[in-house]
Structures are given as C-alpha cells and as structure tokens.
Image 1 (cartoon, rainbow, N blue to C red):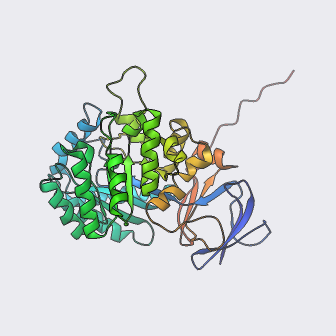
Image 2: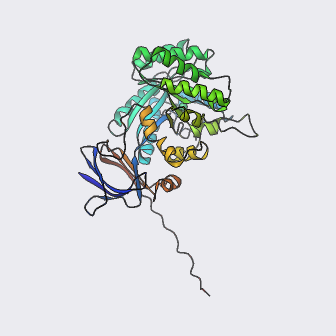
Image 3: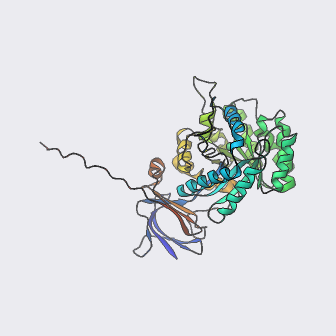
Length: 403
Ligand SMILES: [Zn+2]
C-alpha cells in the first residue's frame, strides 16, 4: 500500500490518500507516517486528452501554414505528406505521448488521417504506439477521412474501422453534402459497432450547422455506441435562441461536445480583423442545456497550431480566459468531462476509484491552474509513472540599508 500524505484536494481539504490494488483505499485526515509527502501539491484525477492529432504533432518547424487558417493547414499537410513515413509518424507520436504523460495525461483520443495521401500508414504507426503505451496511457484512434464521404473517403472509413481504428471520424462541414456526410459516418460507425467523433462545424459560417444533424440522427436512429462532436465553432455564432435549441438537441441525444480553444483561437477569425471572434463553441448554452462539454488540446506544434506544450492546464486556462468558465469547471473540462466523453471509468479522489492521479504544485486549485508549474507526479493504476522536478535558482536580492 502507498500513502500520499498531506495532499490538497480540489475542494481545499488536506488529506492522506491511501492506494492499494490500483485503487484509492481511503481518504483520511492527515496523520504522521510513511509515504509520499504531497505538502504544497494539489491532487486531482489524471488528465484525459479528448482530441489530439498525434500523427501531425511536432511538425511546425518543417511545415509552414502560409495563410494561417484551416484550409492553409490542410493544404500544407497534404503537400508535405510524402515526408511523413510510418517511422517518422511513430517517432513523433511517441514523443508527444511522453510530453502528455509527463503533464499528467493518462488517456488520449487521437484523430489519425486515413486515405488520400496518407493511406493507412499513419493508422499503422499509431496502432503500434497504442500497443507500446498500453497500460500507461490509453490511446483511442479515430479514423479521420477526407471528403467527399459519398466517394472513396466513405470506403476508406470502413476500411480503417476494420483495420484497427477504434472510432469513426470525418469532417462533414467540409463535404459538398454535409448532412449526407454525417449520415454516412454514422452508418459506418453503426455497422462497425464503434463510437463516432466528428470534426463538426469548424467554421465561423453560421450556415454550416451539422451539429444539429448529428444530434437529430443520433436520437432518431437510437445510435448507442457514443457520439462526440469536436469544435462546433459555428454554434458559437448563432443567435441565442438557436444556440439554445441546438444545445437542447445535443443534450437530449447524449452527444458530447469537445471545445478546442487553442486551435480555434489560432485558425479562426482571420477574415475578421476587427472584433475578431474567438472561434469557441457556445460553451455556456451547451452547459445550461445539460450537454457534456469537455476541452482538448487538438494540435501540438503543427500547421494547425504552431505553439502549445501538450498540457491540459494550458487548455483549462484558456477555458477560463476565452471560455469564461470558473477554475473548478475548467479543470473538470480536462478531467471528468473528457473521461465521460471517452467512455472511461470515472475517477475521483474517493475510496474505490481507480488511482489515476496527478499532483500539481500549488496551494490550491486556482494557484495550481494559474501557475501550471511543471513540477508534477503522475500515477496510473496506483503506480507512479511520471515525475517532473524543476530546479530553480534565484540570486538573492541586493542588500540595502534601511533608514
Ligand atoms: Zn482536430
């Protein structure tokens, strides 16, 4: 048995947390004894990344996005695709997983480009990375196909779901027939018995609203494998009544929404130099309607988002700054909410829960979120799997004489 002593919990209590058999045994008042002293650390459920692109990660230095928008990024990756061998993709994805685990992430859903210039090699590479990290970091692979879904892309999606992809993906808002594209993806997921996770309405064009189509189809067909809509940018620019109507459809259908503030802030709004929109989904309307809203990091230093550090605290901070959530809700959007969206067992710092935990330096939750110190400890199934210790040395302030 391990005991984590003097940990600050999310609600501010100080407690000792015992771990046995991969689970939390007891949460008790602090007492002297052996164990790991977490004085000055906040202990939380580990992070879950609900939306990554590990096959594209860490390419920003070599692939430029000259226009800075979504189509510029897609074109840039397309033109560079030949450079991305299976080995190269595997190496970069592995580096990105290591970065994310060190930050406290123990499960990642990554979209993986399939078909077109990429063929199946990114899926093969990511399938190997998924096997390499099994038991430490759970990887879910979403087959991300191009358009039109009514053509070869639809066949590629079915192929990928037979060849190791866990989830059906796609970008219906970029399709010549967006509503039909949603239906094709949903059919493919239903046939394969997998969840669906679509890049949904990643545009500020209010006329594109396939989120409503997805929610409606999920409800009408009784699709029961789990549906997630990522981005949902155009919902954020609808009038309040429309935001409410669609959010209620989404909530009733049980479709989870993933907000992706980093990539949306970078790619969206370039045609609006004055009063530039943030490109976030309608976080508050969705939450008011009872929909599940998680937040993810999306792209890690690639043409879609050239900066970022693969840290859910960066995402949570943006949900405070740009999404106007409180600190506790923002942290929940990178812990409990994505865990539910990905269909993973719930984790809380409570007896009986899986001991998938992260300790963050800080006297309380808001200090830990604000400082985002790199000093962290990460446990998976009760085993300490990552430790980062930062050494900082400052010169003493100059002495001065007091009058
Ligand atoms: Zn994405």
